[in-house]
Image (cartoon, rainbow, N blue to C red):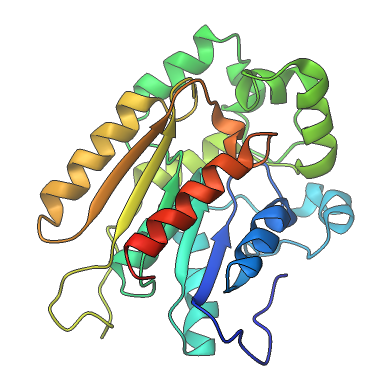
Amino acid sequence: MYEWPDSTVDGRGRVMFIHGTGLHAQSWKPWLELFARNGYDGVAALWPGEAPSLVACRAQWGRQAILRVDEISDHVAASITSHGRVPIAIGHDAGALVAETLLERDLASAAVALAPPYPGLAAGLWRQLRAGLNALTMTGRQRSAMPTGPEFHRAFADKLDFSESEALRARHAVAAAPWSVMVGVRSRPSGSRSAGIHETGIRGPLLLISGGCDLLAPEERVNDLHIWHRRKSPDAVTDYQVFPGRGHSMVIDAGWRDIAEYVLDWLTRQNQ
């Protein structure tokens, strides 16, 4: 799941999935299985220092480093260049910004950014506070910590009932320091272009997806990011899709397949 296989699937291409803050790489397992059935060779990227198993990752949470988005991007980029084959990048939350960065560096043939945080933080943080999120424990802390059930529910899975939120937390959650990651988002570099795959200088296709009820990546802020990308790269494909009524947990909750199948259809339309 976490390393490219020695032999590649004789199918449509490679996909690298990059998880977001507070989730483990194995949260992508249903996506990996669905994409494999559709001819893709997928891998779930590990963040720097992240243990391959959820149990091991939770056991070492007190020793995990505070990471910035550019550090995660460099780590994932090194994994791609070491294998010499450019994948499609699909990321969620902070992982969505990593996917965008890989696309800018010509280290992804296409990218899908699911609920990407916008570099302007004020609106998102205000919405977190209005939702009852404890800013001192979930956004102001300076070290990694496991979210409590109420914290996870309010910040990540507020559109679900508490029992489903608790099941997701038990299955996927790991320690995180969201504020520190977001500082990395705010100061992240635009990404230097390498000698890349696009001889015309036009980056590959980009799809941004938001949930209509997402408190951490509000619809209007993702739309702002969509407009920014279109202005920055007017000759490249930049698409945007909103899923009404969906929250930040869209990639792991019971409705994940609707999102994943939309992404598959979009990749087909982009000849990916």
